[in-house]
Image (cartoon, rainbow, N blue to C red; front, side):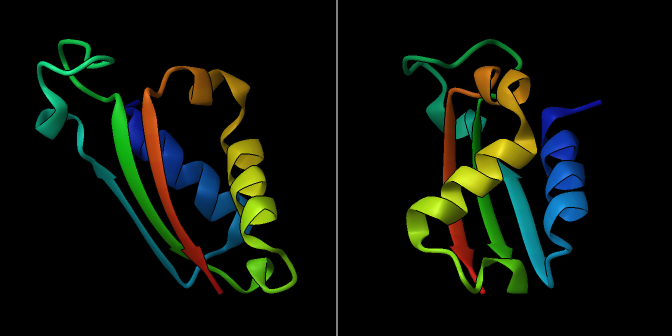
Length: 85
């Protein structure tokens, strides 16, 4: 399964978001540090969920990292997160 799909599946399961967009932006980093052949290294995530309502920005990012899990996070070079309620 593609990492993009794993990210999307785990975030949907954890937060039941009303909006979720996961974009593999790896190709725009070709030739830069952390870019492996085949991509799947740089991702942009935009997520909106009521579950973030009581969390500050740091807590929201920690919750997303926890939902993705240490193994998947370790396989990603860069993860840009745009999170809101």
